[in-house]
Image (cartoon, rainbow, N blue to C red):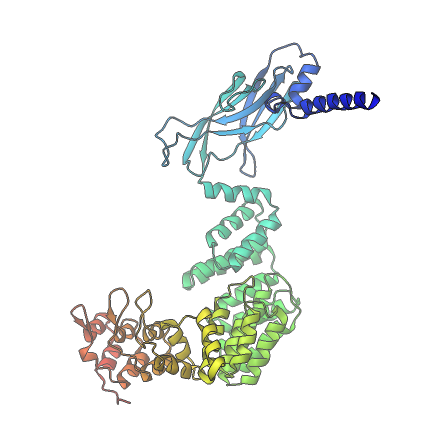
Length: 559
C-alpha cells in the first residue's frame, strides 16, 4: 500500500515538474526581468516621456543621440533611436528603403539620461538623413517587433551627411584604436604594397590630431614615393621629410629615408652624409644599412655595398617593419654574388635566409629554384619546395618549382621512377605553354622540355590567353628561354594573343632590339611580318625610333 501511495505521489510530482518546465515559451519570452520587475514594484507616479533630445558628433567622428527620459516602470518598454529615410524608390533588390534602429542598452525606472551611438544607415544607402527620432515602444504583449505601440517619442531635425559605407567603416576603425595602433596599421598597409590611399588617410588624420607626430610625416613620405616614383614623388617626399626634421632635427628615421630620396635624385654625397649621421645614434632601423648599400651599388662600389648589406643581415632581427630591410639586403647580396658567378656564396645566403625565416617561409621557393636551375640538383629542390607547401604565404612558386623539378627527374629516369615523376609533375605544373617556357628558361631544365616535345607536347600550343611558350618568353624579355624554344622548333610567325598577332611582332612593339636580333638569327625576316595590314616596319616608323627601324632592316647571320 505504501509503495503504491509513493508511486502515485511521484507521478503527480512529475506532472507538476513537466508542466513547469514545458510551459509555452511565448508566455515568458516577451517578459524579461524588466517586465517582471515592473509587476513586482508599483509604477512611479508620472508619465512616460522623452525630452531634451540632442545629436552631436564627437571628436572621433561618431554621431551620438543623447536625451532625457522618464519611465514609470510600466508597461515593459524598449527605447529605440531611428533614422527615418526620406521616401524614395525601392532599392536595387526591390525592397523598401531600410531604416536604421538603435536601442538603448538598459531602460531604468525614474528620470534618467541615455546616449546611443548612431550607426551608418547601411551599405546600400547614399546621401543624408534629415531627422533623428527617439521612441519608447510598448513591449508588454506579444506581437510584431517592427510595429509596436509608441507611448512616448521625441524628434530632432538633424541633417547628417553620411560618407560611403567603406569610408564610415574606416573612420570607425580609426576611432576605436589608439594613435599607436593606427600608426602601426598604416605602416602595415604601406609594407603590404597596397591600399596606399587608406594608409594616407590614416596618417593625415593622425597628423591633424597631433601635428608633431614625426613618424606620420615619414610614413607619408613613403606613400609619396611609392605612389609616384618619379621626380615629382621624390620631391614631395623630400618636403614631408623636411617637415619631420624641422620638428625633430635628430630623427634617424627621417634622415635614413631622406638619404634614400636624395640617392635617387643622384645626390649621393648628401645621402651618405645623412646615413653617417643616422648611424651615429645606432638606430634599430635596418633600412639604414640596406639603403646605404644600395647607394654604394648605384655608384659601382660593389664591395662596399656588400659590406653594408651584410651589416643589415648580421644585426639582430627587429621582428617588426624593419625586418623588411633584412629581406631586401638578402636579395641584393644574392644578386651581387650572382654577378660574380659565386654559387657557393649564393647558396650560403639562401641557407642563412631559410634558417632565419624557416623552410615554411615564402623564401624557400627561391632556394629551391637555385638548387634546380643553378646546381642542377632536382631532388634537393623537391625536398625544399615540398617543405614550403601549404604554409601561410602564397605557395604557387613552390608548386611551380616542385613541378619543374619532377619533370627534370622524369627526364633522367627510367621505368617506374620515370612514370611516378611524370604523374607528380603534372599535379604541380600541368604540361602546356607555361611549363615549356619555364623548363626552357634554364640550361639545367631545358632537356626536360625537349623530352616533353618528343613525347607529344606541341611547342606552339596555346593557353587560355592564346599565348604559346615563346610568347611568354617575349613577354618576360627572357633571352635564354626564347633561344631554347627557337632551337626546339618554336615558330616566330605563330599568331598569339586575343588579336592573333605574330609572336615576332611583340619585341617590335616593346622596342626590345636584343630579342629582335635573336629572332633574326633564327631566320625571321621582318619584311614578311605583318599584322592587320601593317608591316613590322610600319610599326617601327610609328615609334620614331630610328635604332629600332635599323635593327629590323639588318640581315643577321642565320644560325
